Length: 214
Image (cartoon, rainbow, N blue to C red):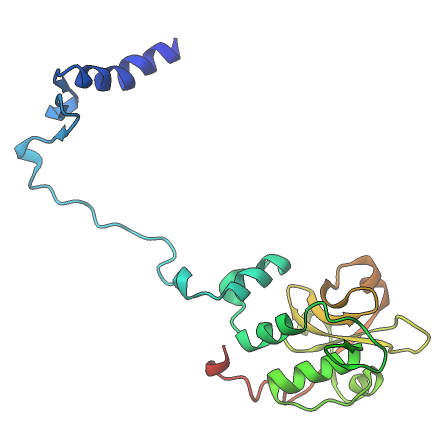
């Protein structure tokens, strides 16, 4: 029954128009044989409503970088919140670089060399060479205080501090892992949650970040 009513109300008028007949709708609107919609002259003076666009205060989508979309999807974040483009350009250039103990280049790099290279290049702040030294030379933070660019530390081996990464937001961090090389992981991952040993912040890490680098 609903299908029959649909045919009568929606399809039938257009079929009649195709036969050269005029079909009248409510309040004088009609479709003529040329399938043109005719509006009575009395309504011609009615102004069309001004369109309202949602999110008009958000950045226009064409101004957002593909890197923002790429990493926002990886970390389940809003695209416009990833505004430090120098950080994500750096990460993208190193992504999947293999892990190599003692390595410092794109042919292979270890965790502390990667965190040091990132912080120096993105924030202009020097760091010690080892994860242990980075831990003891940074101020302690609780997980609730973590901000982009902070360091997160783990005990993944015999030493109290044996691994380090750089925090990105929404519980994600970037690091050079033994299994995947340079990658992004979550602090909620059972392995990293179990081996997490604390976080630290270099007081000068934000000094070189300006609007020109975002």
